[in-house]
Length: 184
Image 1 (cartoon, rainbow, N blue to C red):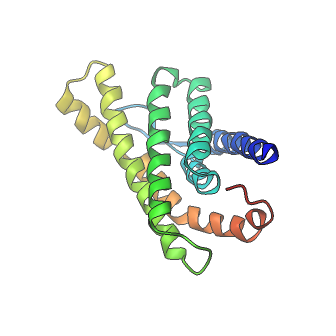
Image 2: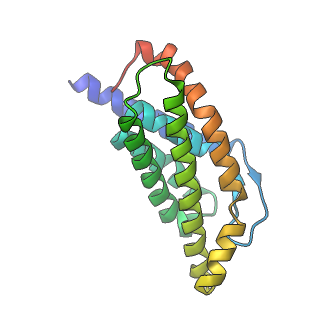
Image 3: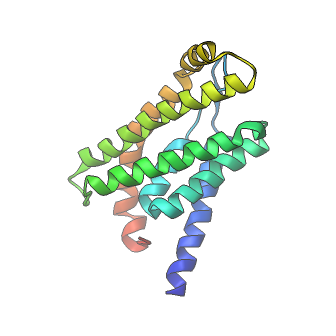
């Protein structure tokens, strides 16, 4: 039992590090009236972490990886929003993954349903975060809502990438690494 708990803790830390690196190494900034949005792979790796580790450990990895990036890269004032977004993303992914009753291949469409829901919730939470950030800067609500909407291209691109890549990476992991080291 202790080995299983230790293994899960190690994988949680590893996933948090991969999420952090997924944001740090590949960033394409996009102009926006709210925040400094950019394209990255952090959300993709956060979703994969939840699929591999389950809700609790996957959410923890996502919150640490995404939150730590924000704290160390000039987004500390709004890192709490990122952490809440990561928690909501993990909850939606875990819920949909459980509800589709995913079993290994040939149920690829179920993984795409999970990644679609992840992308959709990311767009919604990014918009809400943009509204809050804009209002924190002193903008009125109706202007904040418009600014947040105009700032969504990066979140939308990240969501599309997540939709396409998550099922492919998860199936590759399922056929290789997870077959030998299943931690759920």
